[in-house]
Length: 150
Image (cartoon, rainbow, N blue to C red):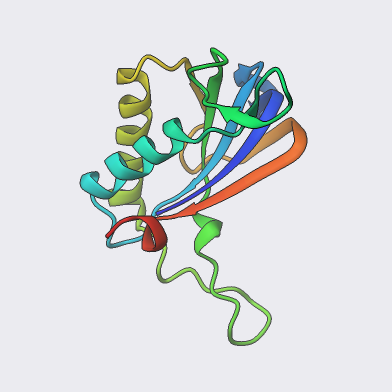
């Protein structure tokens, strides 16, 4: 599982010209699900993401979590995070989770974040989405379950 976490002052996702989700301060998170991912991996990834202290405190030090700043999440499904570009010029996606398991996993991640009391907006799995954001810093973190889940 991969999360690309972008600290934002605003984020929005549109589908067919209509706003599907919009946040102010928080994270826009692109979520890639691999075929071998499980709910246990998702739980660890969500816990790590929500615990990150990457917002600046009163001294400008990255010391505050999303909870500390009353931030929100905009969660976007993004299978292309599992692009394999090692051979040729056309990426392969064989390690990305198939829709029948990846969509429920994406929905599970959304529900876990909501259970934690964080305001959550979302995209739509498999839709052609237009995502816009103002990345503060810019500050972007990549969480890969292969590196944090032991």
